[in-house]
Length: 493
Ligand code: HEM
Image (cartoon, rainbow, N blue to C red):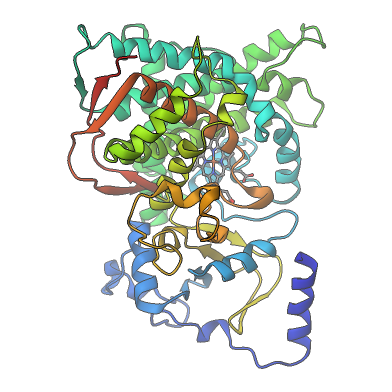
């Protein structure tokens, strides 16, 4: 399939078919050298880059499904059609390239640290990814954490139950904060082989509180750097120093735990069952301990906001759709577990719960676009798209379009179930974890964690949302700028 398409491109080019130029694509007015810069509000135009989700909606509304955007010679294409998205992804090549998160890139260069998976490219990326896939990307690999993750969530549920003395309902005003501590605890056992003791507020050490704050601020500071005039690329500005101090804390923290694990693992019996971190340290993958520190720090950072945000939106949807919540509750109760230890088999028996996560991710695509820089020219709608153009596939727009979804604003998990296959969904309209060999390596782990959290909360409590209307913000990803205020009504089971 891939080969055929590449062939079509070549033939079209050589048969002298009249192709339209990139410059002819619909898009805002462009000027020599500076490109579309004057179209931005800061320069007198009417488009605003931040928030990026709104920027994508505006571009699509004004210019349609295929839009060019250039600044200072940097050509970008926005793609808002699933058949075009398919062509883009099928031509990404064996080492797909995604645009770097530039502040992270500059940080690792200034510190002389190897890049992690998010920013590495070409052969370096291949080496890191090949070493990481068997350890993290497969459901069998992440099931190793089911034991500890069940225990962590059970502790959390007990702490919630203690808030209700006589089985009365209670309200938590900022449930998202509690969730983030649970996620940090779940991630620390993966990245550091250690529990950090984040669940009980009385046990959180100053070191953990600082780590929590640093991880929270990291995304925020990266986003601020992104949208500031990039003087920080050349000078260590005040904002850069703040970002650097925050990153230093996370990297030094990771270094301490990875080194501890390394010293321990050197004396381990080879045949013992190894954790993910131990496998990284023991396998001979030509990865240095510094590579592993970069990979683990990035796991911690890439896992945190993404999973917390996805859970926030999902819990909000579930708590405002009581009928679906009841059906999911029935599905959970059918698992009929004595000890409520959720295993891999149980995770295969919850189709509606899984569909409700997919539906929430369709409606809340936290990454407004996913980017690729292709190694070859492609043709879209008879336009020649030169190689090295940054192509942004606009899932935020497509996921909510009535062209691809009936009643797109409706939270309707059942549209994803097998019995509704008569109305198939084009998979290129929503890809919350990305595509192909460069897709999110933490997908299985994130899904497993979120399913466990949702199963255990819903089994114990009926949820009602009692907060304000949703308000969105943008900090590298689309984030909720409102509190997840939930009423917990204990289930009598
Ligand atoms: C709900 C939670 C999450 C969402 C929605 C999410 C989403 C994404 C997306 C859209 C990408 C880009 C994929 C592409 O270019 O095709 C990505 C990449 C990545 N994610 Fe996640 N992610 C989540 C959780 C995690 C977790 C838990 C980890 C760590 C264990 C993680 C680590 C990474 C890494 C390292 C990459 C870069 C992979 C590469 O370039 O090879 N993510 N994620």
